[in-house]
Amino acid sequence: GIFISMGHIPNSEFLENSGIELNKNKFIKVDKLCRTNIDGILACGDVVGGMLQVSKAVGEGAVALASASKYLDSLK
Image 1 (cartoon, rainbow, N blue to C red):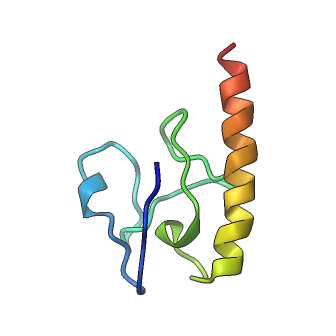
Image 2 (tube, rainbow, N blue to C red; image 1 turned 90 degrees about the vertical axis):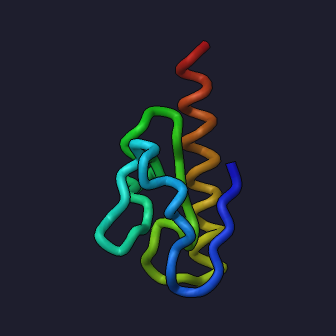
């Protein structure tokens, strides 16, 4: 999926009943490989908080891609 965030407040209200863990500031909780608490669901960029910068989002996007690829390979 693609999540778009602009500003300093995440647009994550639609996730509140999804089972995906959010932190106290309503950002998605992820581990260092961009994985959420639900298998196969990854998140990166502004929606996970931290420094809200394009360069961080791009780097996390690469990590999320590698994690997604590894996850999909494990399903084969």
